[in-house]
Image (cartoon, rainbow, N blue to C red; front, side, top):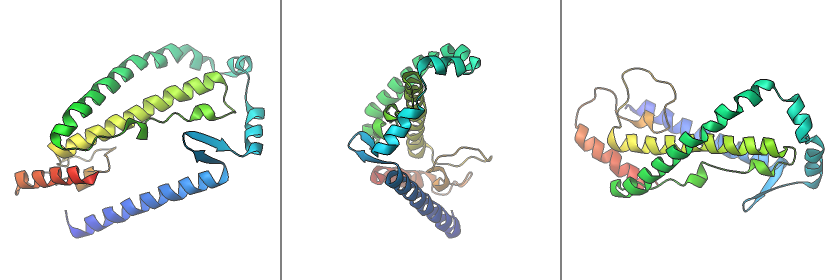
Length: 195
């Protein structure tokens, strides 16, 4: 990878960090404060949220019928999601220490805080909890797989692919075989130091 690309990647990473920080500061300063595991809203905002809350029967009548019909299919996915969670967590707990890779915390990816929103009824809170688990789990799995890929095969693909992880741009170019084994060990050493 040439110096220009390395410099651009560093700039992108710094800008993404700045954007995340700015968005978080804007959100927390305006609407809420995080105190431990609790999210606390200003009293007036909390009251406004309470007034917006739909009762269960009103929600049921105004909800789209297709949402109710497909509910069993969506919630049936909990079984494969839970199994994925179990197997990937087991893989990380058993293999990452052997590889010298720092383990990821599930709690950094799977966050349950939407149930504290007063404008959601109990069904909406249940939906939000399920979605937080599913999307958080996929992000957690994706991060574990990204670390695994960096450890075993830090080589870019020949074809352009969508949805690459943040580690991917730093991988070796496709077909660049010079000193592959030595550079693979460098990637593994970097991975052990990163966390």
